[in-house]
Length: 382
Image (cartoon, rainbow, N blue to C red; front, side, top):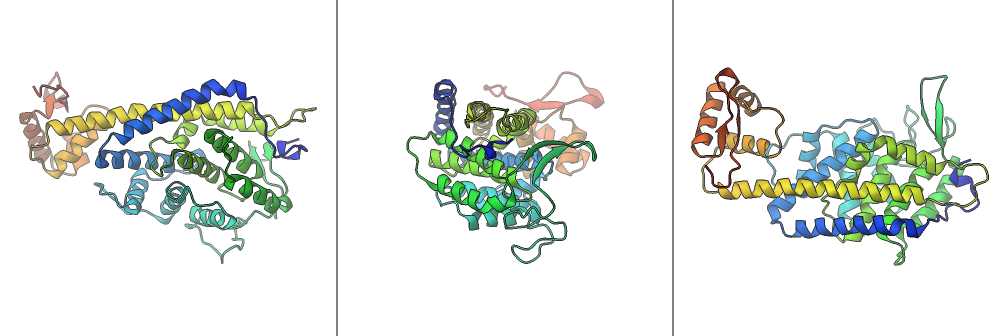
């Protein structure tokens, strides 16, 4: 059996006493991060948001095995938010669709969630596909912008080779989806002062993926719904931590916890989801703590540029110094500089020598063909 087969569905219960301490810790981390972000100037805040949204879009797709180009995602977000970001590249319809869905969820978090809005998100996710008229079924059998029909059998989450598949989960029959989603939307839009916002985000995620209303894209939309409720609770469409990035890092635990929660042991009658809520709270806490660490890097970057704000640098130099500030892996050499900056080795060498003379760079120990360079982070500039 699955939880949707229980008579109590979808009246979730949980043991509140077990969640009080981890929830308080996570909410404290959230508040501290938001407070630190408010202290940043517009430019740095915009940079942090661009990084976070890029990571969120890339990772929510990666969880489902779909790899998006990070540069395209960053460019798509920057253009839609009107941010002045260097190195923008063209983005394809697949990238733009995921970006549009995520921005609609977080930038318009206070707008009611409706069936029409969910259908629009679904079409955004699959706008890159060869699509028939709205609500029709494509040749592949995937229905875009409409609830699933189970025309090809029950909706199941399976793994393993053909003939030896393992069924991890089976969703409610398609005939129940419309009524299930009507109840879900009513609950989602209801103002619940007594329900902690983080818990509502966790419950919404679980509730939605349990119904599994679409042929595909359910996980990405469920994570967007959680982000939407978190944005509502923070009263801000600006995102400074990526829940999807942390879920990706804990992907196995994520799927194991979903399966453990959605399956019903023999004799079970209540709809206790304490373990799922505890896992979600911890995952969110890890995401916020990671963002706090990355914020320290952004502030370090700001202090660095403040020290050298009066120096005249060319675009190549500024771009390459930012790469080093963002955590360039390995050793920076003249040949790597030339390749990344798309210039000749002589030009790269002149750029580097100029930066050494200006105290932005320094030579690392060693020499010859393996000479490498690093940022001069000495606050004295020496």
